[in-house]
Image (cartoon, rainbow, N blue to C red; front, side, top):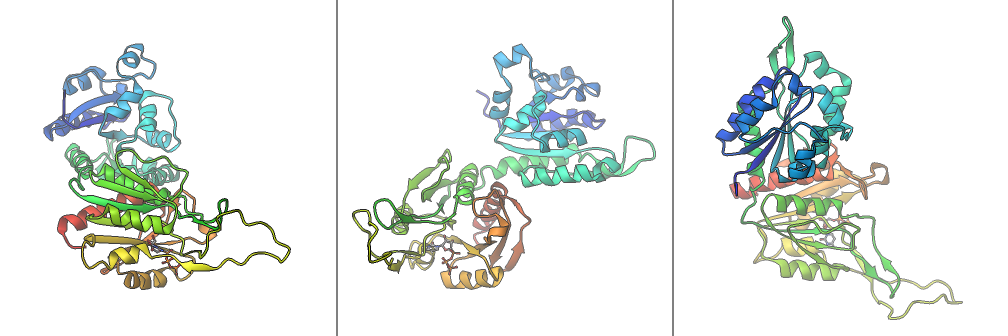
Length: 403
Ligand code: CTP
Protein backbone atom coordinates (compact mmCIF):
# COMPACT_ATOMS: atom_id res chain seq x y z
CA UNK A 1 0.00 0.00 0.00
CA UNK A 2 1.25 3.47 -0.91
CA UNK A 3 1.82 5.32 2.39
CA UNK A 4 2.87 8.64 0.87
CA UNK A 5 0.51 11.55 1.63
CA UNK A 6 -1.83 11.96 -1.34
CA UNK A 7 -2.36 15.36 -2.91
CA UNK A 8 -5.29 15.65 -5.25
CA UNK A 9 -4.37 18.29 -7.83
CA UNK A 10 -7.29 19.91 -9.63
CA UNK A 11 -6.15 21.65 -12.79
CA UNK A 12 -8.43 24.48 -13.91
CA UNK A 13 -8.72 25.93 -17.39
CA UNK A 14 -6.19 28.74 -17.71
CA UNK A 15 -2.94 29.25 -19.55
CA UNK A 16 -1.09 28.69 -16.24
CA UNK A 17 -2.21 25.03 -16.50
CA UNK A 18 1.07 24.26 -18.27
CA UNK A 19 2.88 25.10 -15.02
CA UNK A 20 0.71 22.58 -13.19
CA UNK A 21 2.53 19.78 -14.97
CA UNK A 22 5.73 21.02 -13.34
CA UNK A 23 3.81 21.32 -10.04
CA UNK A 24 3.12 17.55 -10.18
CA UNK A 25 6.90 16.97 -10.16
CA UNK A 26 7.54 19.52 -7.40
CA UNK A 27 4.90 17.86 -5.18
CA UNK A 28 6.42 14.45 -5.89
CA UNK A 29 9.87 15.84 -5.00
CA UNK A 30 8.45 16.40 -1.52
CA UNK A 31 7.43 12.77 -1.18
CA UNK A 32 3.78 13.19 -2.11
CA UNK A 33 1.71 10.94 -4.29
CA UNK A 34 -0.21 13.10 -6.77
CA UNK A 35 -3.57 12.38 -8.36
CA UNK A 36 -5.00 14.70 -10.99
CA UNK A 37 -8.38 15.97 -12.03
CA UNK A 38 -8.64 18.15 -15.14
CA UNK A 39 -11.69 20.34 -15.75
CA UNK A 40 -13.12 20.47 -19.26
CA UNK A 41 -11.48 23.87 -19.81
CA UNK A 42 -8.14 22.61 -18.49
CA UNK A 43 -8.08 20.04 -21.28
CA UNK A 44 -7.90 22.91 -23.77
CA UNK A 45 -4.45 23.67 -22.35
CA UNK A 46 -2.98 20.35 -21.17
CA UNK A 47 -3.96 16.76 -21.83
CA UNK A 48 -5.06 14.11 -19.32
CA UNK A 49 -2.39 11.91 -20.93
CA UNK A 50 0.43 14.29 -19.98
CA UNK A 51 -0.90 14.76 -16.42
CA UNK A 52 -1.50 11.02 -16.02
CA UNK A 53 1.97 10.13 -17.31
CA UNK A 54 3.57 12.44 -14.75
CA UNK A 55 1.34 11.19 -11.90
CA UNK A 56 1.93 7.55 -12.78
CA UNK A 57 -1.81 6.88 -12.80
CA UNK A 58 -4.72 7.96 -14.97
CA UNK A 59 -5.96 11.53 -14.66
CA UNK A 60 -9.66 11.96 -13.92
CA UNK A 61 -11.92 14.19 -16.01
CA UNK A 62 -15.59 13.18 -15.94
CA UNK A 63 -18.22 13.08 -13.24
CA UNK A 64 -20.24 10.55 -15.19
CA UNK A 65 -17.41 8.26 -16.24
CA UNK A 66 -18.71 4.72 -15.62
CA UNK A 67 -15.20 3.31 -15.38
CA UNK A 68 -13.97 5.67 -12.69
CA UNK A 69 -17.29 5.71 -10.81
CA UNK A 70 -17.08 1.90 -10.42
CA UNK A 71 -13.39 2.03 -9.79
CA UNK A 72 -12.64 5.12 -7.67
CA UNK A 73 -15.66 7.44 -7.80
CA UNK A 74 -15.79 11.12 -6.96
CA UNK A 75 -16.49 10.59 -3.26
CA UNK A 76 -13.45 8.33 -2.89
CA UNK A 77 -11.30 10.75 -4.84
CA UNK A 78 -12.34 13.40 -2.29
CA UNK A 79 -11.89 11.12 0.70
CA UNK A 80 -8.64 9.38 -0.20
CA UNK A 81 -6.70 12.64 -0.55
CA UNK A 82 -4.84 14.19 2.38
CA UNK A 83 -4.93 17.60 0.71
CA UNK A 84 -6.64 19.14 -2.31
CA UNK A 85 -4.73 21.70 -4.40
CA UNK A 86 -6.46 23.73 -7.12
CA UNK A 87 -3.95 25.17 -9.59
CA UNK A 88 -4.68 27.20 -11.57
CA UNK A 89 -7.83 28.28 -9.73
CA UNK A 90 -9.65 30.31 -12.39
CA UNK A 91 -12.22 33.02 -11.63
CA UNK A 92 -14.94 30.62 -12.79
CA UNK A 93 -13.75 27.73 -10.63
CA UNK A 94 -13.46 30.06 -7.61
CA UNK A 95 -17.02 31.29 -8.23
CA UNK A 96 -18.32 27.74 -8.52
CA UNK A 97 -16.53 26.74 -5.30
CA UNK A 98 -17.97 29.76 -3.46
CA UNK A 99 -21.43 28.87 -4.75
CA UNK A 100 -21.16 25.22 -3.70
CA UNK A 101 -21.68 23.90 -7.25
CA UNK A 102 -21.25 20.24 -8.12
CA UNK A 103 -21.73 20.33 -11.86
CA UNK A 104 -18.48 18.67 -12.89
CA UNK A 105 -15.97 16.29 -11.33
CA UNK A 106 -13.72 19.06 -9.95
CA UNK A 107 -16.59 20.99 -8.32
CA UNK A 108 -18.20 17.83 -6.92
CA UNK A 109 -14.92 16.67 -5.35
CA UNK A 110 -14.27 20.13 -3.88
CA UNK A 111 -17.74 20.07 -2.33
CA UNK A 112 -17.37 16.51 -1.03
CA UNK A 113 -13.92 16.76 0.54
CA UNK A 114 -13.36 17.26 4.25
CA UNK A 115 -9.62 17.81 3.75
CA UNK A 116 -7.73 21.10 3.59
CA UNK A 117 -8.04 22.90 0.25
CA UNK A 118 -5.29 25.12 -1.16
CA UNK A 119 -6.04 27.25 -4.20
CA UNK A 120 -3.55 29.02 -6.46
CA UNK A 121 -5.58 31.66 -8.31
CA UNK A 122 -4.49 32.71 -11.79
CA UNK A 123 -6.32 35.15 -14.02
CA UNK A 124 -6.18 38.49 -15.77
CA UNK A 125 -5.56 41.34 -13.26
CA UNK A 126 -8.91 42.95 -14.06
CA UNK A 127 -10.74 39.70 -13.43
CA UNK A 128 -8.76 39.29 -10.20
CA UNK A 129 -9.66 42.81 -9.00
CA UNK A 130 -13.33 42.45 -10.00
CA UNK A 131 -15.75 42.69 -7.12
CA UNK A 132 -17.40 39.29 -7.67
CA UNK A 133 -13.98 37.56 -7.63
CA UNK A 134 -12.95 39.31 -4.42
CA UNK A 135 -16.36 38.57 -2.87
CA UNK A 136 -16.05 34.88 -3.78
CA UNK A 137 -12.52 34.77 -2.44
CA UNK A 138 -13.58 36.31 0.87
CA UNK A 139 -16.27 33.63 1.08
CA UNK A 140 -13.77 30.85 0.40
CA UNK A 141 -11.40 32.24 3.03
CA UNK A 142 -14.28 32.34 5.53
CA UNK A 143 -14.97 28.71 4.60
CA UNK A 144 -11.40 27.86 5.58
CA UNK A 145 -9.89 27.53 2.09
CA UNK A 146 -6.16 28.39 1.94
CA UNK A 147 -4.85 30.65 -0.79
CA UNK A 148 -1.35 30.97 -2.30
CA UNK A 149 -0.67 33.87 -4.65
CA UNK A 150 -1.45 35.26 -7.13
CA UNK A 151 1.77 37.12 -7.82
CA UNK A 152 2.33 40.36 -9.67
CA UNK A 153 4.00 40.35 -13.07
CA UNK A 154 3.59 39.92 -16.81
CA UNK A 155 0.46 38.14 -18.02
CA UNK A 156 0.30 35.68 -20.88
CA UNK A 157 -1.48 38.36 -22.95
CA UNK A 158 0.95 40.83 -24.46
CA UNK A 159 1.11 44.17 -22.69
CA UNK A 160 -0.91 43.01 -19.68
CA UNK A 161 0.70 43.15 -16.26
CA UNK A 162 -0.51 43.29 -12.67
CA UNK A 163 -1.66 40.91 -9.96
CA UNK A 164 -2.95 37.65 -11.35
CA UNK A 165 -0.01 35.39 -12.20
CA UNK A 166 -0.25 31.96 -10.63
CA UNK A 167 2.25 31.41 -7.80
CA UNK A 168 5.31 29.46 -8.95
CA UNK A 169 5.14 25.64 -8.64
CA UNK A 170 7.86 25.72 -5.95
CA UNK A 171 5.81 28.19 -3.88
CA UNK A 172 2.64 26.13 -4.27
CA UNK A 173 4.47 22.93 -3.34
CA UNK A 174 5.89 24.62 -0.21
CA UNK A 175 2.43 25.87 0.81
CA UNK A 176 1.02 22.36 0.24
CA UNK A 177 3.78 20.84 2.34
CA UNK A 178 3.12 23.33 5.17
CA UNK A 179 -0.54 22.34 5.19
CA UNK A 180 0.29 18.65 5.27
CA UNK A 181 2.80 19.17 8.09
CA UNK A 182 0.24 21.29 9.92
CA UNK A 183 -1.82 18.14 9.92
CA UNK A 184 0.54 16.55 12.40
CA UNK A 185 1.88 19.48 14.38
CA UNK A 186 0.30 18.39 17.66
CA UNK A 187 1.40 14.75 17.36
CA UNK A 188 2.19 13.30 20.82
CA UNK A 189 0.37 16.11 22.67
CA UNK A 190 -2.71 15.74 24.84
CA UNK A 191 -5.37 18.40 24.45
CA UNK A 192 -8.41 18.82 26.68
CA UNK A 193 -11.41 20.83 25.45
CA UNK A 194 -14.67 21.74 27.18
CA UNK A 195 -17.66 22.59 25.01
CA UNK A 196 -21.37 23.33 25.03
CA UNK A 197 -23.58 24.58 27.82
CA UNK A 198 -24.10 22.92 31.16
CA UNK A 199 -27.56 22.02 32.31
CA UNK A 200 -28.42 22.57 35.96
CA UNK A 201 -31.53 20.69 37.13
CA UNK A 202 -34.35 22.36 39.06
CA UNK A 203 -36.53 19.25 39.24
CA UNK A 204 -36.80 16.07 37.11
CA UNK A 205 -38.19 18.00 34.13
CA UNK A 206 -36.79 21.52 34.38
CA UNK A 207 -33.30 22.90 34.17
CA UNK A 208 -31.26 26.09 33.74
CA UNK A 209 -29.22 26.20 30.54
CA UNK A 210 -27.93 28.73 28.00
CA UNK A 211 -27.77 29.25 24.25
CA UNK A 212 -24.33 27.75 23.63
CA UNK A 213 -24.46 25.33 20.67
CA UNK A 214 -21.03 23.80 21.33
CA UNK A 215 -20.00 24.47 17.72
CA UNK A 216 -16.86 26.43 18.57
CA UNK A 217 -15.62 24.00 21.23
CA UNK A 218 -16.36 20.96 19.05
CA UNK A 219 -14.57 22.61 16.11
CA UNK A 220 -11.50 23.21 18.30
CA UNK A 221 -11.49 19.61 19.49
CA UNK A 222 -11.83 18.35 15.91
CA UNK A 223 -9.03 20.66 14.68
CA UNK A 224 -6.74 19.51 17.50
CA UNK A 225 -7.43 15.87 16.58
CA UNK A 226 -6.81 16.67 12.90
CA UNK A 227 -3.47 18.15 13.99
CA UNK A 228 -2.52 14.79 15.48
CA UNK A 229 -3.27 15.49 19.17
CA UNK A 230 -4.81 12.99 21.53
CA UNK A 231 -8.00 14.85 22.43
CA UNK A 232 -10.50 14.56 25.26
CA UNK A 233 -13.64 16.61 24.65
CA UNK A 234 -15.81 17.16 27.73
CA UNK A 235 -19.16 18.27 26.41
CA UNK A 236 -22.38 19.50 27.95
CA UNK A 237 -25.68 18.61 26.22
CA UNK A 238 -25.47 19.64 22.55
CA UNK A 239 -27.19 18.72 19.30
CA UNK A 240 -23.95 17.86 17.55
CA UNK A 241 -22.48 14.49 16.60
CA UNK A 242 -19.32 13.42 18.45
CA UNK A 243 -16.35 14.44 16.27
CA UNK A 244 -14.49 11.36 15.01
CA UNK A 245 -11.04 10.36 16.25
CA UNK A 246 -11.23 11.66 19.82
CA UNK A 247 -12.63 10.75 23.24
CA UNK A 248 -15.88 12.46 24.15
CA UNK A 249 -17.11 12.58 27.75
CA UNK A 250 -20.75 13.68 27.99
CA UNK A 251 -21.76 15.58 31.10
CA UNK A 252 -24.72 17.65 32.24
CA UNK A 253 -23.82 19.88 35.16
CA UNK A 254 -20.86 22.16 35.92
CA UNK A 255 -19.82 19.91 38.77
CA UNK A 256 -19.84 16.84 36.49
CA UNK A 257 -17.81 18.83 33.97
CA UNK A 258 -15.18 19.74 36.56
CA UNK A 259 -14.92 16.09 37.64
CA UNK A 260 -14.54 14.91 34.05
CA UNK A 261 -11.91 17.58 33.35
CA UNK A 262 -9.89 16.61 36.42
CA UNK A 263 -10.07 12.95 35.40
CA UNK A 264 -8.88 13.80 31.90
CA UNK A 265 -5.67 15.44 33.19
CA UNK A 266 -2.73 15.48 32.60
CA UNK A 267 -2.88 17.48 29.40
CA UNK A 268 -0.39 19.69 27.57
CA UNK A 269 -3.07 22.15 26.51
CA UNK A 270 -6.56 22.85 27.87
CA UNK A 271 -9.14 24.97 26.04
CA UNK A 272 -12.22 25.94 28.03
CA UNK A 273 -14.85 26.79 25.44
CA UNK A 274 -17.88 25.61 27.43
CA UNK A 275 -20.48 28.12 28.54
CA UNK A 276 -20.63 26.83 32.08
CA UNK A 277 -23.65 27.91 34.12
CA UNK A 278 -22.38 30.25 36.82
CA UNK A 279 -25.13 29.21 39.22
CA UNK A 280 -27.24 26.16 39.97
CA UNK A 281 -30.38 25.79 42.04
CA UNK A 282 -29.40 25.18 45.65
CA UNK A 283 -31.95 22.43 46.00
CA UNK A 284 -32.96 20.00 43.27
CA UNK A 285 -36.50 18.81 43.86
CA UNK A 286 -36.85 15.05 43.49
CA UNK A 287 -40.38 15.37 42.16
CA UNK A 288 -41.83 17.83 39.70
CA UNK A 289 -42.57 21.14 41.40
CA UNK A 290 -46.35 21.77 41.14
CA UNK A 291 -48.10 25.09 40.83
CA UNK A 292 -49.08 26.40 44.23
CA UNK A 293 -51.83 28.71 45.33
CA UNK A 294 -49.31 30.62 47.38
CA UNK A 295 -47.63 31.78 44.12
CA UNK A 296 -44.48 31.02 42.13
CA UNK A 297 -41.66 29.22 43.93
CA UNK A 298 -38.42 31.08 44.61
CA UNK A 299 -35.28 29.58 43.12
CA UNK A 300 -32.30 29.93 45.40
CA UNK A 301 -29.08 29.77 43.44
CA UNK A 302 -25.57 28.87 44.55
CA UNK A 303 -22.38 29.46 42.62
CA UNK A 304 -20.89 26.66 40.53
CA UNK A 305 -17.19 25.87 40.65
CA UNK A 306 -15.19 27.84 38.11
CA UNK A 307 -13.58 25.06 36.07
CA UNK A 308 -11.16 27.25 34.13
CA UNK A 309 -9.94 29.06 37.22
CA UNK A 310 -9.62 25.82 39.22
CA UNK A 311 -7.42 24.21 36.56
CA UNK A 312 -5.42 27.37 35.78
CA UNK A 313 -4.59 27.83 39.47
CA UNK A 314 -3.49 24.24 40.06
CA UNK A 315 -0.13 24.04 41.79
CA UNK A 316 0.70 20.70 40.21
CA UNK A 317 -0.47 19.11 36.99
CA UNK A 318 -1.44 22.43 35.40
CA UNK A 319 -1.53 22.11 31.59
CA UNK A 320 1.30 24.04 30.00
CA UNK A 321 -1.11 26.22 28.06
CA UNK A 322 -4.51 27.10 29.54
CA UNK A 323 -6.92 28.96 27.26
CA UNK A 324 -10.27 30.46 28.24
CA UNK A 325 -13.06 32.22 26.40
CA UNK A 326 -14.71 35.44 27.46
CA UNK A 327 -18.30 35.76 26.38
CA UNK A 328 -19.18 39.40 26.85
CA UNK A 329 -21.99 41.70 25.81
CA UNK A 330 -20.37 44.99 26.91
CA UNK A 331 -16.84 46.41 27.12
CA UNK A 332 -15.63 43.19 25.52
CA UNK A 333 -11.87 43.83 25.57
CA UNK A 334 -11.61 45.44 29.02
CA UNK A 335 -13.70 42.69 30.61
CA UNK A 336 -11.74 40.00 28.78
CA UNK A 337 -8.39 41.42 29.93
CA UNK A 338 -9.61 41.48 33.52
CA UNK A 339 -10.79 37.89 33.11
CA UNK A 340 -7.35 36.78 31.88
CA UNK A 341 -5.78 37.94 35.15
CA UNK A 342 -8.58 36.80 37.42
CA UNK A 343 -8.87 33.32 35.97
CA UNK A 344 -5.11 32.79 35.79
CA UNK A 345 -5.15 31.51 32.21
CA UNK A 346 -2.50 32.15 29.54
CA UNK A 347 -4.73 33.23 26.66
CA UNK A 348 -8.30 34.38 26.32
CA UNK A 349 -10.42 34.38 23.19
CA UNK A 350 -12.92 37.17 23.64
CA UNK A 351 -16.17 37.33 21.75
CA UNK A 352 -19.09 39.68 21.74
CA UNK A 353 -22.16 37.56 22.33
CA UNK A 354 -24.76 40.34 22.24
CA UNK A 355 -27.82 39.03 20.34
CA UNK A 356 -27.16 41.30 17.33
CA UNK A 357 -23.86 39.49 16.57
CA UNK A 358 -25.61 36.12 16.10
CA UNK A 359 -22.52 34.38 17.51
CA UNK A 360 -24.36 32.30 20.09
CA UNK A 361 -25.71 29.39 18.07
CA UNK A 362 -24.43 30.82 14.75
CA UNK A 363 -21.65 29.67 12.40
CA UNK A 364 -19.49 32.78 12.24
CA UNK A 365 -17.34 34.02 15.08
CA UNK A 366 -15.47 37.29 15.57
CA UNK A 367 -12.83 36.95 18.25
CA UNK A 368 -9.92 38.79 19.79
CA UNK A 369 -6.99 36.76 21.04
CA UNK A 370 -5.62 38.21 24.26
CA UNK A 371 -2.22 37.06 25.48
CA UNK A 372 0.46 38.56 27.72
CA UNK A 373 1.91 40.06 24.51
CA UNK A 374 -1.23 42.03 23.64
CA UNK A 375 -4.52 41.90 21.74
CA UNK A 376 -5.01 40.53 18.23
CA UNK A 377 -8.23 41.16 16.31
CA UNK A 378 -9.19 38.22 14.10
CA UNK A 379 -11.52 38.90 11.16
CA UNK A 380 -15.05 37.44 11.18
CA UNK A 381 -14.66 33.84 10.07
CA UNK A 382 -16.31 30.47 10.40
CA UNK A 383 -16.01 28.70 13.74
CA UNK A 384 -14.03 25.98 11.91
CA UNK A 385 -11.55 28.57 10.68
CA UNK A 386 -11.23 30.13 14.18
CA UNK A 387 -10.53 26.60 15.43
CA UNK A 388 -7.85 25.92 12.80
CA UNK A 389 -6.19 29.27 13.46
CA UNK A 390 -6.20 28.69 17.21
CA UNK A 391 -4.71 25.22 16.76
CA UNK A 392 -1.97 26.72 14.58
CA UNK A 393 -1.18 29.23 17.32
CA UNK A 394 -1.25 26.51 19.96
CA UNK A 395 1.11 24.37 17.87
CA UNK A 396 3.55 27.30 17.57
CA UNK A 397 3.41 27.99 21.31
CA UNK A 398 3.80 24.38 22.35
CA UNK A 399 6.63 23.86 19.86
CA UNK A 400 8.49 26.94 21.13
CA UNK A 401 7.61 25.95 24.68
CA UNK A 402 6.65 29.53 25.55
CA UNK A 403 2.94 30.20 25.95
N1 CTP B 1 -15.83 29.03 32.96
C1 CTP B 1 -15.62 27.88 33.67
N2 CTP B 1 -16.40 27.59 34.73
C2 CTP B 1 -17.37 28.44 35.14
C3 CTP B 1 -17.60 29.63 34.42
C4 CTP B 1 -16.81 29.90 33.33
O1 CTP B 1 -14.74 27.10 33.30
N3 CTP B 1 -18.10 28.13 36.18
C5 CTP B 1 -14.93 29.36 31.84
C6 CTP B 1 -15.60 29.34 30.46
O2 CTP B 1 -15.47 28.08 29.87
C7 CTP B 1 -14.79 30.40 29.73
C8 CTP B 1 -14.39 31.37 30.81
O3 CTP B 1 -14.49 30.67 32.04
O4 CTP B 1 -13.60 29.86 29.18
C9 CTP B 1 -15.19 32.63 30.90
O5 CTP B 1 -16.54 32.38 30.87
P1 CTP B 1 -17.59 33.59 30.92
O6 CTP B 1 -18.97 33.03 30.94
O7 CTP B 1 -17.23 34.60 29.89
O8 CTP B 1 -17.19 34.27 32.29
P2 CTP B 1 -17.67 34.08 33.75
O9 CTP B 1 -16.59 33.47 34.55
O10 CTP B 1 -18.98 33.34 33.76
O11 CTP B 1 -17.82 35.59 34.22
P3 CTP B 1 -19.04 36.62 33.95
O12 CTP B 1 -20.28 35.81 33.89
O13 CTP B 1 -18.93 37.52 35.12
O14 CTP B 1 -18.70 37.32 32.67
